Length: 177
Image (cartoon, rainbow, N blue to C red; front, side, top):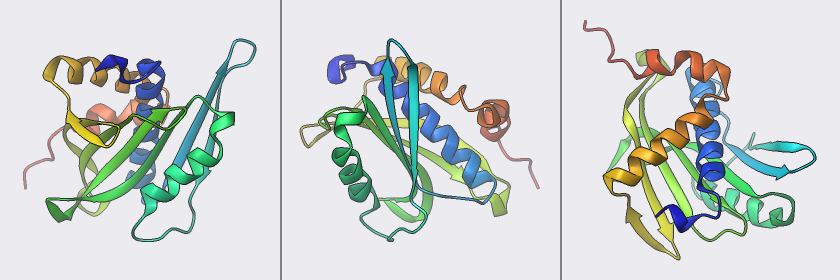
């Protein structure tokens, strides 16, 4: 599965950064769907361009972000899009959703993180779950790959200081009433 991307560390690192950014925004009740585009060069290191979707439709948001990523494909190596979505099996349960890949758009990793709303005392529920889309086939990751991808994801999370500082607290169970 690691060969699904040219540089899985870059894709999952950017996915982690996008997840961290989204968690910070949602926890502060300032949610904005965001497309992250990254370009790494020998001379200038990694540059990340954020495209915030200030006004967005209720449906088709991921498709809109993919179209934006495709339109800018010549200017980036990896991309990640983060938004709040509803679980397909439970429309009343919102999740933090990140889709990420490298250029050109082909294989996509999807990261789903359940959370408690800020009204309930923002927090994360469980661990992020991964699925991989390879040429329109959805594959679940086996436990070994999920563990290594979890580590790469957390490297990206650690790059967003506010999220890194709060991740453990957000991941703790809520206090009992």
